[in-house]
Length: 147
Image (tube, rainbow, N blue to C red; front, side):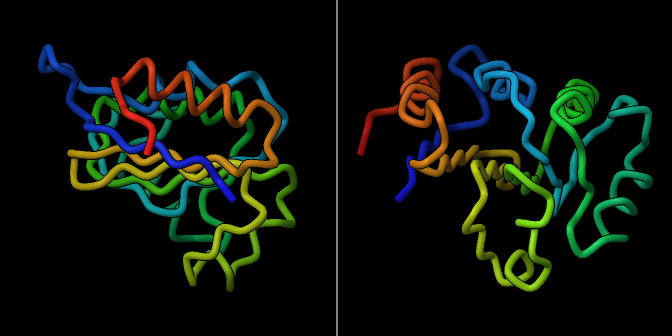
């Protein structure tokens, strides 16, 4: 079971809700994060340009694996996400390449998806500490009704 929160990427004032805005609501953690898909406009995300990020994503069946600190640096360096698939797990061994390739994110604490520069989707595994609080915080911040 999981908590799913979906909302528009553009706020009511015409601004863009970035990954850094979403991660600001996530408590500090020791999870392992991985970018499995990325398209966006970079400003030196984690010291890398667009091409280098895409290469890191494509070069490993586990995607571009990062720590909490690194994923926050990455998020701060991307001006806009067109598409993103970012997952978090308690241990890197949970990033089974066959399951990830099949879109099976069982064992992941969180799955964040940016779609077509339009929507954010945040799925939080119910067994994750503070899952309901985080989901409630996202709903409150982005004006999303609970389904």
